[in-house]
Image (cartoon, rainbow, N blue to C red; front, side, top):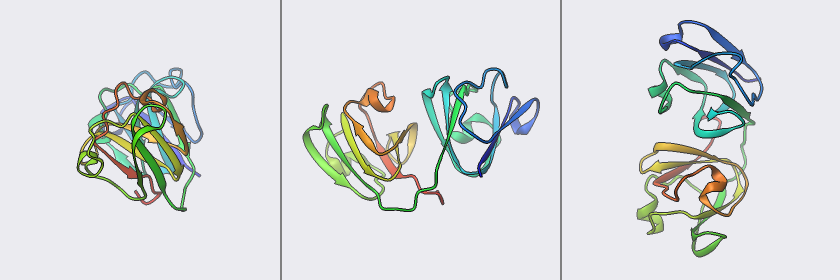
Length: 175
């Protein structure tokens, strides 16, 4: 199955902890996280316990420092592995909360939401099929939000502090 190893030091140095399942609070295992290795599965690492705060989507590979996973700091306090998905992808974006306003349906990646949606803000979303990643800025940069199938009536439902989404892509196991 999947495994992720958290290291307190950069370049895989210092104290480390191996994890092979969801963990709501990593505090008892390490103090900070400056590098990671994902040897199996796909993971979402969170800045705060109980799957809260900044989200970092990680595929198999080496992450020698927190900048390599687009981290804002060395704080990782919870993590979840998500299952492989090989089906189709479909979601609807709305420019108003509660699935109101202008709607567009997507089935593929979008490097620039404004160019395709003609709105800078996504206030609500219905993920009908597949896993998706929202990014705060165009070209898959900035804060990341992991989107599972379901209805997100406001940006707070996916962990966002504001409705600004610059790009998104399908989360595929061969990321």
